[in-house]
Image 1 (cartoon, rainbow, N blue to C red):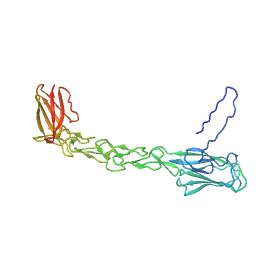
Image 2 (image 1 turned 45 degrees about the vertical axis):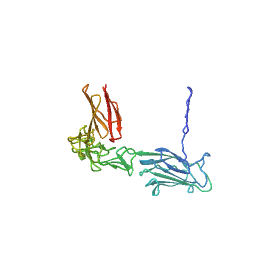
Image 3 (image 1 turned 180 degrees about the vertical axis):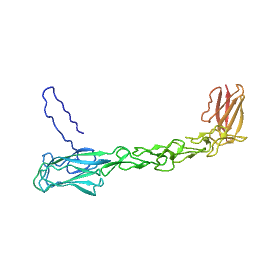
Length: 338
């Protein structure tokens, strides 16, 4: 990390300074450069380039539509120490076409633009005679969201697809989403209670409503069948509702049914046979599958449901404690009316 500061006083003014910042990838022997703007050059601290240099820079800002190289200064040994500039078809630059070159001598070259978004610069020197070399500035252009680079320009994504920032390809909207406009930067979701079965949808009309007994969150590609113990009574339900105690449902139900005589259920649970216990003083307790389901205090004529044995103390005037009877293999209650 380097920090540059400048402080001036209240008198006189001068031309100031121009500084070029560099990183290891921008100096010869170069390498891969991903900055949007910057400089490359081949001279060392002496101000001259070395003998027997073999340098390259691949300038490939991610998502760039174009990269332009502008030479600021140029001086190499004529016809011997050579600079070439290429446009590359990929970031590896295995396939490339000459934009400028071979370049040598004292003449400042023209600028060069790669419409592929990748540009390569090479430099080679022989074993004698050194010059000041070159300094070149590069800059990239980018497409806006919803567009991708193509041959130096930007094209909009078609309906049913999108492109985020710096994207190089348009992405098809997944099932459960859609893009109704060209140049979309994101896909919209099908609403909760609806689903979209096909990728690349172009309108909200592709979203279909879930039927009774089914539900779906937003952006779903299918409707989810309500599980047993739950239901959805209306079309377009975002979620299934749990059946109340004393009722049940099969999978895909649009309503809950009352348990048959001699059975009862907890909320969302199947109907099971139940047992009734009388617990002094003057209390009635209903047990189902080890759960404290209902208790009734005769003296104060108060009753309330109990959710589970993990919560042994009920609010109000009824106190419950659950124990296990090893002889019966079932849980029973000790209940006291306050």
